[in-house]
Image (tube, rainbow, N blue to C red; front, top):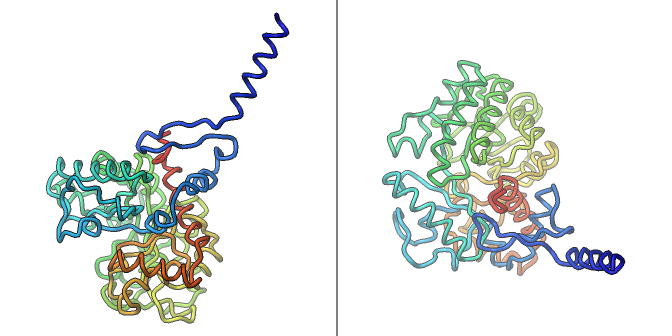
Length: 389
């Protein structure tokens, strides 16, 4: 009898190991497989496993970070109707602006409905993001009349990392309950002479900028907000504005010695996301925005600085980009350059068609798109947005 019981336990163990374990994600209507092959400490391996369930169309749409109006077709969206906006446009992220906000209750309903509809469409949880740096660049706080957090300039003047950490925590403390999980901050730009109009910075010392940005990023992260370093390769020495042509006339050696220090330090500390600006880096020899430049993204950020995390473009609606490309082609160019997420394409439908056409012609491969989707999902997994752990 004892021998029979031992054999029974052995068979039961073998039987149980023969089937993958599945668990339901807290914020996701599908299942996360947890078998030996797919469960790993590395979020990239888990992301790869999740990606196998996606159609090619879903993979393409996962690349886009859009505004609500791109999904609804309205001029101004503050609420969603009963029709699922993700049924035909299963994007990876949604950007909330001041015009999408009326009050706290409305905003919470909007973000919750976005996540709920994404779940019903069988998607992974959305990135829901906004610009909230503190000071003047505080879309949510300004709209809801919250007290403004200290600006990067104010923090930089104190040189106090504890204040930067506290500021990140304070911003995350109101963003998280409102349904956000991404903040396009901290700004990691180092001022060379004087700050570009509208750009907030911690100061002229790259070591100071690095310390303040790192502390703020940690404050955001502690309360569930994914930080995103902006605006590589740095707005500190640009000529022009984002609405026109931005030109960076410094040498690569000059930028290595100054502007890139905060980004280099962040990469060493495994920063989740970096946003690439539209500056024309003259030193790399091309005449196109950094956000669509292979030498800048793949050559410098991916190659020289060894960044393998998530790269997102700055808004592709800016004239610095649209003046260089036909509608839709800016997204193809950014992907070919090495970017992962495409922020605010001028026309979502045209962008998707352009990518599909590039796939059909061989100008872009599905493997290239899957590289980016894997990075996107890995950040969602890493920040416990998929597994809920």
